[in-house]
Image 1: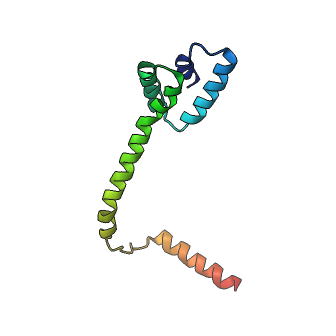
Image 2: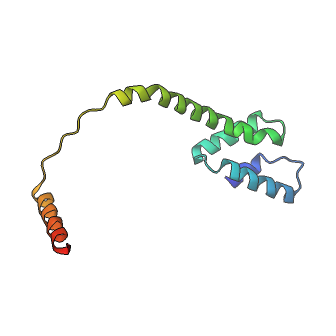
Length: 111
C-alpha cells in the first residue's frame, strides 16, 4: 500500500510532509482489500489533479458499493423475514445421545 500511495503522493511535498500524508492516507484506506486498494490507487493516478482529490477518489467506489449493499439488504429483508421455514429436530446420533446422558449425569451428581 505504501508503494501505491507513494506513486500518487503530491510531487511538491517535502519528504517529511509526504511521510505524514502517506500515513494519513494509509489510515483512511486501511479497510480496503488489496485488489480494491490497487484499483482505487490506479484510478486516483488517472483522475486526480491535486492531492486533496486522492482519498475521496479512492473511497468513492467503496461508498457506492456500501450504499448498494444497504439498498439490496433493505429490499431483501421483507422476503427473508416472511420466509421462515419450520425447524425440525434431527435424530440424535449414538454419540450425541451418550454425550447428552453424560451431561445429565454430571448435572445430577453436582446437585
